[in-house]
Image (cartoon, rainbow, N blue to C red; front, side, top):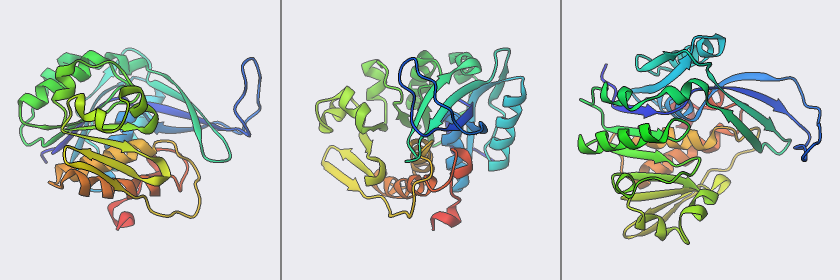
Length: 287
């Protein structure tokens, strides 16, 4: 089966602990039992896309350890192709996540094997049949820049979830079909949302949490509302759910606004369950 969507990015084991509140500097706070879940922005994005029916493969790296096995199993059981996920001598990446009672999270990432995702891995890709390449920034910046360049020159639509924010070459930003940022990241990049387009992408999407998202285009801004949910359980990976669902719909030929409407619904449903990948809805659940 030909993959119409490639996701280049990180795969991490999420070590999650619930806390009553986040500790201040020099303070110790007791939390609940640690839960180990599959995560990483790249793997999350790929799983979210696969759950809603995309033919997707991940380009990444894992360590030869228990966490790596956990992640491969999660990817494969979700329908994500793993032939392009290499085994690194470094340990699998780990994200240390604290979750407070309101469902908000704080995260520290140890990249590990993700640092070994290299431009040479991009050069080995076969892009025939690929319609969309989606990247995030928990892997080396030079690899992301190279991947966007290669894909753009091959006529593949390119999506970048610019999280965390990093300085990118102007040419890279100009090669983007869609730039995805949240409100805080948008404020770091431009004085207003329209300023995001001045950076070069054809479209920018600003995710707005429970308020949905805003699609910024040359002819104006379209706000895409979220859906009402009964209770927020855990917001971990909601942004990745949005990126994955958006990419899945773009790979199926949707325009950016229609894809964003669908993605906002997927992201909202994802916060009703604990964890990142385990929380992502299927196409049937999205409706």
